[in-house]
Length: 194
Image (cartoon, rainbow, N blue to C red; front, side):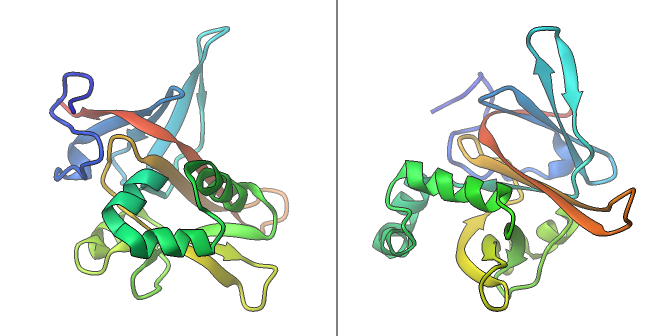
């Protein structure tokens, strides 16, 4: 299935360097621009006044498979795994992802197969081919920051996958380390640099 007359196919991990990607666009109109320093920046055009709502540059952006892709490619093992976590359909899967991105006491971490936390796009690309990359949904209220579930992801854009982006920064008032994270909508377009 072709999309937007580009050569990208829905569900396929694109085998092009991210340095060759200008931006990706999601179903709700968010645009993720790839910056020269390796970070990404999300913005969205606000319809009523056509202004762009620009977020701070993010350190890491990965692409999260939807429920159907994950269960179709992973087979019964993934169906059973997700069912055991209460994610037995696309709606509950999306609900749990959003809950871990937005609820105090819960978080999402990008990790390698060996469990090393990956906080930049560069780190993701360094380990993706050899180890694989995952998002770990962490419940910080349970003993020892317990991992609820891990889901395989990719640092390369995939049409139909959701976005997950995050950045770490120090609070301007308190100096405390902070984290901003966001589960986005499905990618509907990938734009290469000229």
